[in-house]
Image 1: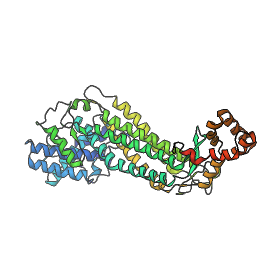
Image 2: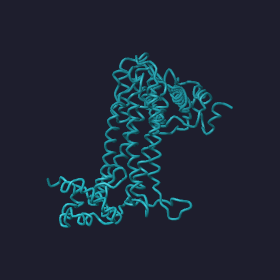
Image 3: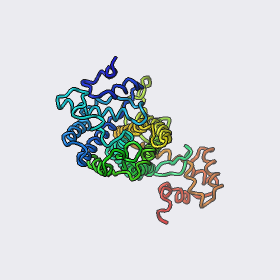
Image 4: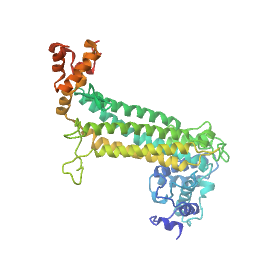
Length: 459
């Protein structure tokens, strides 16, 4: 079987010898290089061709062939020409050559030349001019990650923050039992509880946004080890400017290319911020799972949209499926972050040889979190409603309202009231009066849930 026989779905094969060798030598799993990374590489080829022509080291006609093919690839017109697996050489050389060969053969086809003839474009001499896989591949991860974060993930997070903000406002006046250690605690409002979810995501948003600062400096122009061997003067600055124009993002040329070619701390940091977001999202959906558990034998404070039957055997059962899907995504991303951290520490001297893994995990995580947030928001969060009957009932029964009496009668007597009420199955007011520690009128004045949620409001 030929190498391309491993990928029979391709209608016409524009990859060349190195693409074929990679298919034979690295037929490992089904994980392919993310297509967004391919699009980023295409933009690099586009930008490099423009700069090389401007600096008089590339013929104008060749530039146009490279640019035209790169634009087609970045538009998704040739996605089926990029079948290579993630699990290849640690530099990503096979993928860089895959796109070089595809661009070369697209130009050959456009000019009526045989595929593989390297006419009018040579994949190395022309398409890869002034470049090395060691600078283009990590730069493509920077570009794809920055685009994914700014144009996909952050806008969805903003919608999620807004959804929780709306719930926080809607639920401002709903006073409920607070819980610490999963035990009854002093009251708060459901709006205050939702505000915690809102701000936890908002803070994660800010962290992710801040991490972009380390993604914008690019390695391009560093070539093999960071020295810029075989590049014309000024290439690095000019190619970064071209990338900035193509993406509408503030990419720059890294002042020290040795640093971000030998290691990928900026990518590790970005992945870590996705992990922190996942930690927060996992906590939030677990809160929602608890508050909606029931409907008769649980907290049952929140009512989730009934999107689908929850059981194949128990009629009428509705499960928190969006919470569960989000929890699995968050758990997966936390695991992917661990792999990226190990990969980031695995560089040796002038190059880190875990680039495909880092790129795959980072871009996969961006996509997973984006999709999970969108699904969770639209299919659950926006449709959550409070069960005010249950909330009011639990608040009225709460023994922890006795905390408001502590400044007046002391901790020990307040504790005795709570225990007495629990043992005698009476409410706090009755217990306080029977023990003779406070009058009914004083109890009503002091133990007021509305004053307990904002105790310093009138001070």
